[in-house]
Image (cartoon, rainbow, N blue to C red; front, side):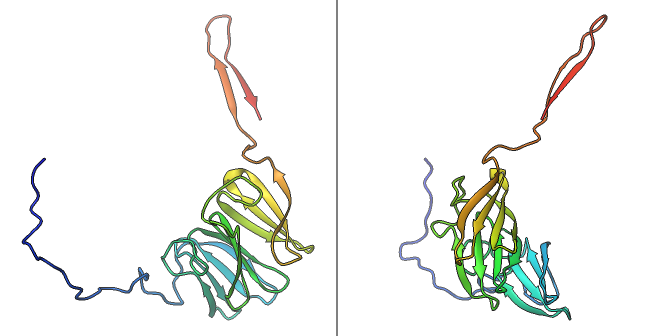
Length: 202
């Protein structure tokens, strides 16, 4: 192997300066949104915006003023106050905020204080058990305090009872890991007295 010159003995480096702001990839203001995806309007006409590429959840009052932001603009990893794949959100009867974020759901109080995440253990990991998700995309709450989560890559809707505060598994809509509407076409193309046949299985 060729020799690599590593420099003169005793060569050292010292910190001089940082250009930019750590964990702030771009300037953040209240008038720009980075790829808005999910929208939700509460009973007080507050608009909630899920910012997919900005990795935030933004709240605006009826006058259009931003009043709350959860997440770090342009920063993606899984933490209590950092989102990495936010897709949708909803509020419950106590105005708490639930966000579908990657392979987890996260609950915040109305001021943005983190209350809980589900699953608690390694929430960034995907799975197909009833305590795991594989790419959450949508979230909704009914009048009976059932939380519905679209578990996209598991091809199912997971239903939880949140009347006691924490999500308790209730039921599954769909079949875990099995998608519907699969189109399979078999064809035979022959000449003369034969014909082309196509069979579709759903």
